[in-house]
Image (cartoon, rainbow, N blue to C red):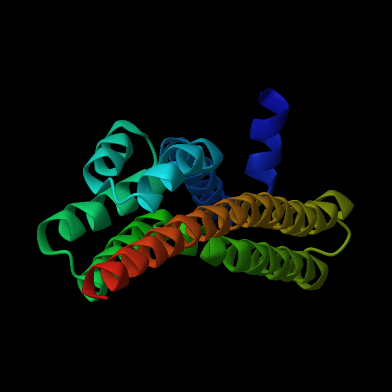
Length: 210
């Protein structure tokens, strides 16, 4: 800990915003991980339960199953089924599913833009630390020539700030990429189950009007 504090102190004033960025990355990473875990739906198991019910038009039973399941996919399908049970309008069902999917997609994307910003911001802050460190070095060269320890201190500040900024950006990029892939998987699952529901509802409606 003492070594870390010494390194932080030698990195200059830029280390303070870099520390704030690192705290944001850790906090957002933990919060999003917990949220995505709760948002995950066992889609294969859900499809095994819903497919035979959709095939025979047992919408009420399918709705009950979705309400009892966890995750975003089950919530979106439950919203669509609740609407369809009352109205029996396929167009309204599609709009209901799209609205619910848009709502949950927005919640899933929440705060990922901050990680994206930190990926860009951290190296820039590190570069700023490099510039200020080199300015200090050249100030020593012009004003206090003959003090090698002061000169190396300015170079050390530049290197520490740059390395810290790059490390934070790399961690933020990895976390952002993992969550972005997780988000894409959940959205794909929503589209898969929603398409199945709309197809079966359309087929049932066509049979009833035939």
